[in-house]
Length: 340
Image (cartoon, rainbow, N blue to C red; front, side, top):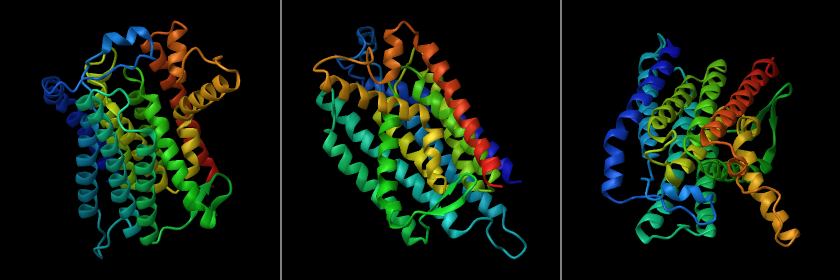
């Protein structure tokens, strides 16, 4: 019975996300919420100037509505003969606190996007402002989990649950903020972030299902369906971009799922594409400074390197999605065999 709610969540989120575009895209155009293309990006991206941004509201609304609705209905219909809910209070807290964390990151992204479109500033919020807000959200989430009795343990394949102790909290905060920004950097060409996150959501749904975390499985299905619905409007040539509103939300959402599953370390294999994007920027900047102006990549993040090498946007999306699917399958296998 629990699997039915996962299927419903995926289908409903897809429908809501896709349908919202019918209203949202014209609304964003009417409000002149167009994307400002940075001068240091590929020159041919200038043709995308003015494309409506903040389209991430499609999958934000879809995933939030669907997760809450399906989880509540699952809890109401899944009680046993004694009236006991199918999930513990802590498990429920992980769902709702995680969802709220993702929304907060989406709100930070919205502020950034709004500054860009309203003030006509390319860079929006300053890096310092973003980091302060992002660490504040991560700290609030971790404090909430502590108050609900969550432990400082994480699942390590073939070792079981390993207690990290007090170091868990600073490491967790750094991991969350790092992943949120890594997902943000992946949003650079039509359909890339949404496609990669779709596959991440599918495999997280399977991992949650295997560990009997139906609420988290519903949550993962909701983001997978929401991203697929968004791709109707975002796949090349994009009619709208997700903006920082969407990409920061996705980063927070992925962290919420893996922290909810007590599989924080799996942010590395599941998030390998995002991490590669982030480190390509770090490596490029470091190499540029050390060599006084030389570049290791033609452009960073790395998807732009492939674009400058002659790959089409569609080819990049397909290849990166395949890599993510392989990483997701590998993560699932680690859970299947590493937990025995």
